Length: 511
Image 1 (cartoon, rainbow, N blue to C red):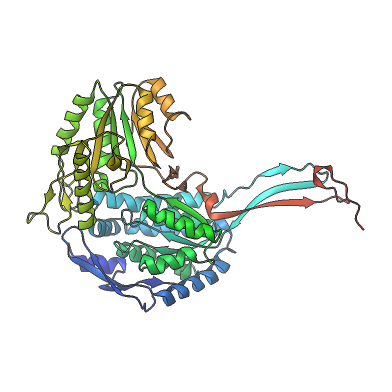
Image 2 (image 1 turned 90 degrees about the horizontal axis):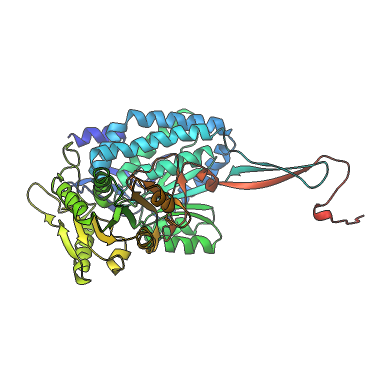
């Protein structure tokens, strides 16, 4: 691959600025080396933003908001439509960059860019559907209704595992709502952010709008991240990341009475019923556990399998794992690329050790691949372990391709195990039994924000609201009515009569 040519097409340089506010600033922070997990090489460098750079970005964003929020929503939608078209032109190149920088296989990298394209399409229609309700007033000759207004400058904090799509979910919806965004990507994958911001702002500039509608700051979390979450000029923080990170953001933003959309950890379970189609179940679990090398918040972490089919299912799953081709994510024959870095490998190995110490056993995998075919030290076999649901290590989310198997007898027992973890993002049941399925989907069933039947825990569509409950954070992004998080609601009353009636029948004799 000619990386220099790829970078030239996408606007990525050998040394990149870490801040954009309509122009690329001459940033004052430390130099960040961006490593490729595929082979450990340095892809490029970024001069990170400092505190002064951050302040310039926010001030520019405030000015841009005054202009952008006054543009009619359908016109904003048309600009977002054009941005989606521009991303279509560069889907292949951007998908390749995602694979190089993050390590997910090429088809998943392409799929991530497709999510941006799809959410832009969704947002175009949404721009004409920012509906408010009309209510009947109890007062004569009065009319009540609600309307939705742009919120302001929004801070977007994204994780390494989806270096493009999560920004797209937030940016496209926020943009048609009239907001402007300041994006702080993970420092592990800033080059994809540089490319996305370059593409989006080319369209904004061609339409005569200030570049600070979509801004960027790359910098240390302890500096730039802390400035962003504590900034009263930023009424909403949308953050994707770990549960400890979410706790910190919730506390800081809450203390200033700001808003937050938190998309945090998932410890997602699949229930495999004795009434399941095992061929479909194995396929669904395979993608849920192997996809993105187990580094999705929706990855399958726990398998709760009926005792009558446990051994058969286990054998089929191990057989499928043995056929997994691991290697360079740009190779179309490869199903699983590297983990993001050596620290992630160490975390997975520690989890395997923890399973054994608590009484479980490793059924397959977990070996680090460190030959000349696996440069960089980030390749590891996916792991299947037998473990009890109550083990401490099972209760925590390990962000790696390790899955825990356990048995159940009754569906109620399986649901109790599924729900007895602190997280509540995605869930799934494989069953053709109507009562089991309906119980799973009822208020007595899955306590997660996403519930799937005969489908993987991974692979959510952009048309639905994405997010989870409990320590997953409670936030919702993407489709459905998640747009309401990005706007402020206003209840309006109009008195068109010749008197001044009061609500609740109150009589007040004024002057």
